[in-house]
Image (cartoon, rainbow, N blue to C red; front, side, top):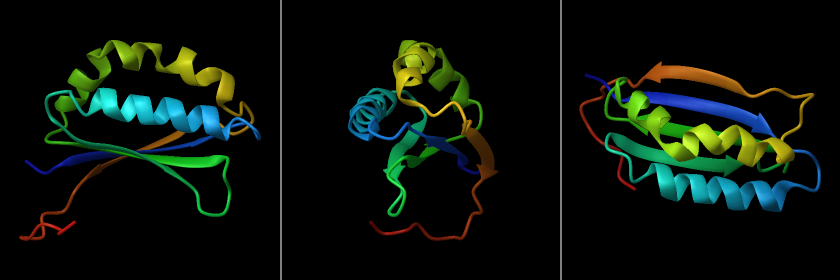
Length: 106
């Protein structure tokens, strides 16, 4: 089965970037402990500091259920809510990675 990837785009309120960055880093450290989670990588836009992308990679699509069962996932809206821009709602995209026959070297 191909790796399953979710890319989330979200936006913070101006001036809330540092708090959001800290919470997203905490979330990453938490979620990376979940079985089946290959990566949970938050990224801040290079031009717009209020724009963020989170790349979530799972061994298979069913591993998203493990992610969603994590207590931090359930608390995430309350934890991040005060920092998010309500005028710019979060967008999620779901992907199956294409098997290329080789792995990227990091």
